[in-house]
Length: 167
View (cartoon, one colour):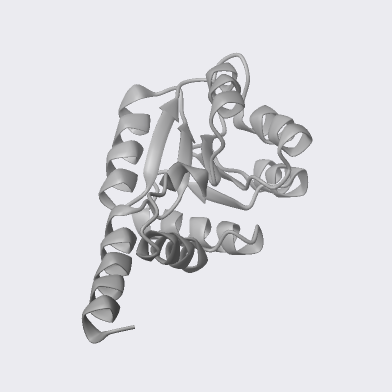
């Protein structure tokens, strides 16, 4: 391969890693301002994030669109984050779930972690803490962010168009 071709391939990989989402995230929270804030923060940090206001809406979205990680509030009307976690463990056990709550207790933390939550974070959540939780959850699930970025970059450098939502 010539220097020009190598340079173009490297540039293509850099562009792909800049524009491809770090991970696809579903944010589930019944409070609009919390959900919208999380979506804005995650979007600014390179995640492809979508929101749902209830467990029912989250399950409907997940049936149409797989995600890499779910960030869910614990306390919601009708059905809570623990119920969502249990449903996901039954239907999609490889999808990590990070629980976020403003009403954390040792009892609820233990229940969530025993049910399979990847992490349990207290509100107000520090964006760095969320990113660390995502990185650990994705790594444990075999979907590490660097591996996803490298795969997207390699595919893009081979002159193929890639839909990042496929990864």
